[in-house]
Length: 383
Ligand SMILES: Cc1cc2nc3c(=O)[nH]c(=O)nc-3n(C[C@H](O)[C@H](O)[C@H](O)COP(=O)(O)OP(=O)(O)OC[C@H]3O[C@@H](n4cnc5c(N)ncnc54)[C@H](O)[C@@H]3O)c2cc1C
Image (cartoon, rainbow, N blue to C red):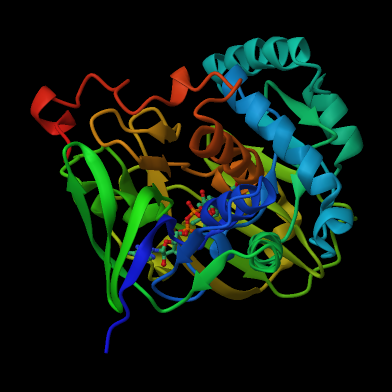
């Protein structure tokens, strides 16, 4: 018999980093009625497939602030959660080939310094001196953030989830949300694969499936899934450690160390939106070509394996965070593109403030759901 819960609850849909972090901060603030529903297993979808990069080198102040707040959590993760997430502040090195990219880097570096983000602006010669394995011939320069780095996203999400559970959050895996009930402009509960749960608050943290959850309240949000593929080399020690996250902005190629291997990936600007996560060997060849161009020594590295995951992308690559007007009690934290893992701690904290205190000091205007001109009036109508 499906269960039928009667008490209004805070229901979180999706157990990746964003849902797990939200559950934790709600419980930490004293909420005793939080349920997290995950249709599969915790942190196995996008979060577990992420390459775990954590940077403060953003161009928009709102993203810088989200990352700064999150970095503080990552730095103290072991003390707060009892889990080592292998946070290595090996740095992020952004590389520019084109003049407009370089101009953007310089303008971003100014913004970052205003927010006290440590960032170094480097010439090709300085880059070559510090990372001799890089080909700098076609570069104008780069920026390096020594406090940036990477961590294990699966361990981080599980740290949040386990601590949330200890604080009383009910976490149910293998329970899918199939519908949302609403009345008079307010959410009332969720239909699930194992019965109805009444809820005065429903939080959409469903990652690439967030658009489907939003449609359950009649909302058509511009969040779409796009495949991103990652490849891991066989153990490769020819590049001295630590290997920073190297981002070749104009090639959209990146690589970083992952002991004892190297991880690498690239975006395909021509790939349409889909839920496809298969590994494409032809694309792998293009990634290897980019890798060998930027770090010729990688020619000697063999590929061990590859995997595909999904970015959830909005028209401006920034998330939608907040309660949706016209759907009281329906909150979204979705559309994080390639930075949802690193922003997870701050976003969960902000959502807990919005839900329990009715507001937050964080200026969420850049992440408002209706900032896109291409959402037509009819599509904004909810519940
Ligand atoms: C290849 C790759 C590399 C990346 N690298 C980085 C990086 O270096 N740094 C960074 O910060 N970010 C990175 N990202 C992005 C980052 O992984 C995501 O932004 C982040 O994990 C999103 O977390 P989430 O909790 O929103 O979504 P998810 O982790 O996808 O969690 C959503 C959950 O919702 C569940 N769900 C969906 N529908 C339902 C339903 N109806 N009922 C119940 N549950 C449901 C899903 O099963 C899933 O577990 C990368 C992503 C990819 C794919």
